[in-house]
Each structure stands twice: as C-alpha cells, then as structure tokens.
Length: 324
Image (cartoon, rainbow, N blue to C red; front, side, top):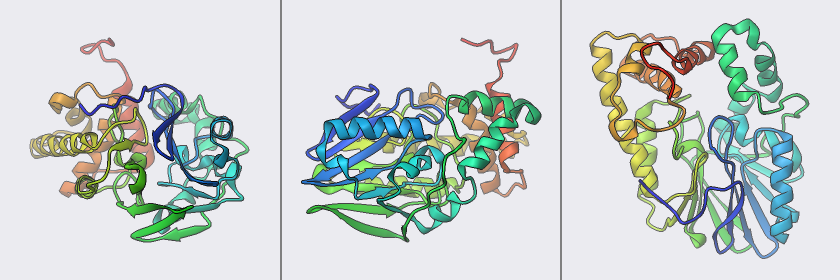
C-alpha cells in the first residue's frame, strides 16, 4: 500500500514548501480533507468542510500557523459534495472556483435540502436511519449556499503569488464535475474525492470507466511526490494506481455477478475484492455495484433513496455475518 511519513492526525500538516493538508480522521462519511497553497502573502484554499463549525476551526488553525492564510484570495471546490463546499459561506469574500458542471451540481443538493433529509430520517425507514447515523455529527441548518464565483471547463491555471496551481477537470467520475489541483512547484496533488485512501470510493456519477481514465491521467503526471486525498491519510501516487486496480477488480467481479443474474445486494455481498477487502465504508459497494450494473446496460434504479437503501441494508449486521 502507498504510504507517507506524514502522520494521520487531525489538523494542519506541511506537505510542501508552501503547501499544507488539513486532515480529519477517520476519513469516513463527511470527514474530508482540505488544502492550503501559499506563496509570499498570497494563499489558495482547496475545499471547505461539511459545516460552519468545522470550517471555522480549520480556518482558525490555518491562520494561526500560516500568516498568508489570514486573507485567502482564492478557494477551489474540487466537486459538489457538501463536505467539500458547505463551508463556502465563511470564505464568501474570496474568489471561489469550480468546474462549470460542479457549480450546477451544487444547486441540486444545497445545505437546506440535506438538513431536511436528515430531519426526515425517521420517515425514510432504514435508509433514513443510516443517513442520520453517518451525517448526524454535522450541522446543516443555517448554512448559506454560496456558489462558485468563477467556473471553467477542462483545465485552468491559477496563480498564487508566482506559484502555478493547475486545475484539471477529470469528471464525471465520483461526481459530475470532479477537479484535482496540481501544484508542480511543491510536487503536490490535491485529488478531492477522486481518491479515497483507506476507504471504498463511491460512484455517484460515473461511469466507472471514466474514473479509471481519470486515474490514468493522474498517473501520467511525472512531478507528483505527495498526494492529498479527499478522505484518508496523505499518501503518494501509488495510491492512485491502487484505486485503479480496485475499479478493475470490482468491474470484473460485478460483471460476473451481473451475467449470473444476481440482484445488486446479492452481488455486493458476493464480490471478492481480494487485497481491497479491508477498506472502510464497505456499504458503498451497494452503490458501486448498482452503478456498474447501469454501465453494463441494466435499468437498475440509481436514485438517491434506492442507493442509500442498498447501503443501509449492507450496513446492517446479518446472522450469518456477525459484526466484528
């Protein structure tokens, strides 16, 4: 497995001459990472966090450690999931940059809508209970939806002082408009949720083949020393190769189950993931298999309630598979 000498501890960690990672163990649902890039007095923030309290704590930590963070000139949202953009209200005076597709996708699930879903959990059965369990630690009420002020398609180079930050749109994969931030001068790549390190990825958009292509594109970067994933510990480029291997194996296993006529949940319980069997958030297999079935041509429903229902079912202990 890819490794790094940077400890997986909560808080701010230097990952380059003018680059930092803000980490939130254990990296599970909602516990995302962010990044800071500086040159002189200029600074750029990669992603905000899932609610205002967490984002405020992060910003205070950054400002106490890095003077350039006192005035963040630019914020990059790597994608539309709330754990990477719901804190935008606290940096609303900065230029906020995202892909055009991500900006549109942010409008689909504003904080108020997620707050309503969590509040309605008891009415949504097992899916609602699961949603309340994974998102219960966060506070979505009262968060103002602050969208990007600048959008782009394909690639965009930003400047932080004299330092280049290269934004590369690699979606649709995890979401419809995923972006990574490449900082060649520091040898750092901030991947957003193109990389979950230590946990199962989750395919909200796909197709999965696009995610494999995104991995290939990132593996072709020849100056990346340090990789900051959207969730999990800081790592190196080898973790992206491992993720590619995960998707190749899962695709083959899901194809086997699909051709055998297995329903999604049976398939999710049957796939043999070999070296990837110990990853966290294994319930996400319910989503990933459903999305692969869709890629294979199935009319398998992939609405949010159905997908959360799959995960809720997989998260429940079974008599023949007692919890460890």
